[in-house]
Amino acid sequence: MSKNDLLYYLALQKADGVGAINAKKLLTHCGDVQTIFEEKGSKLSKISGIGSYVVKSLKDKTLFDQAEKELAYIDKNNISYQLITDKNYPDKLKHCADAPIVLFSKGHINLKDRKIISIVGTRNITNYGKEVLDTLIESLVIYKPIIVSGLAYGVDIYAHKLAVKHQLQTVAVLAHGLDKIYPSVHSKVASQMQENGGLITEFWSGSNPEKENFVKRNRIIAGLSEATIVIESAAKGGSLITADLANSYNRDVFAVPGKLSDTYSKGCNNLIKTNRASLYTSVADLAYLLNWDKEISVKPIQKQLFVELEKDEKPIYSFLNEKGKQQLDQIALHCKLPIHKTVTVLFNLEMKGFVKPLPGKLYQAI
Image (cartoon, rainbow, N blue to C red; front, top):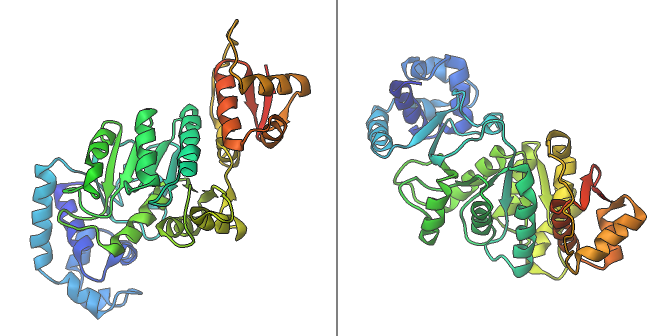
């Protein structure tokens, strides 16, 4: 698309009362973005959802003055952009009815034909949440997914940091323009992310992180991904909104269960209870339901001779060697280990060539 097209898209995005859904209606009716501003108001007002207020807004000549200023900012700061009609616009997000007509981004982001997972949760992450997230990201490395979150305190920033640590591409969706980072204490992580991943937003420069912007941001987090994982959440919270949005887009949602008495497990437990999320116990759940095991091609790992097994590895390997193929929960039960710990030990045994995972959350000794 040319800069002239971007100018018209910016003007359309800025028009008061239009919004993402009505913008697409106008594009479909008029055929291209420039025609929208040239079409007679009487014809535009006949489009469902386009009333006199929207028509008047589209005829406001100051829209292009504002669009020119934003275009100058984009050029000056080397901001990348994707229009809803572009081939490089995120595929999964494009299929959402309320997808933004323009996205702005910084960094090295490549979403094409990639596994994309959103990880969300409370801003008050507990040690339990950190432990689950540590195991989750470490176990995801073999699948090389893109980790999407919102750069907020708690679960979001912890997920981004772990992705950077394990050299996974990670993307933060912002609730404001690219001229700032909120919260500012996450600026260093945001900078690191741009080396392998980056920042995405629909908001112009100068936009502040207003309360309503976070809900808009959450729909992009849900829409970019094939699945959303809620790590921890209180009974109410933004992560539950993201889960509901993901469900509305017919995407998979997973929730990490917790004790009934834990404040930041109530939201997750309720998602599972009301069938709005699948139970998450390990990456095996994710890989099985998303059919990742069938897609991934992993070279067989040769067993390392004379390797000394760790304390927790010996009983698991002995159990599988004696009993043959076993379900994850049966392994954990027999070896008296929590599920998340069992997943980590199994992953280590797999890397050493002693165990191999099978479809259906089964494991077998080699």
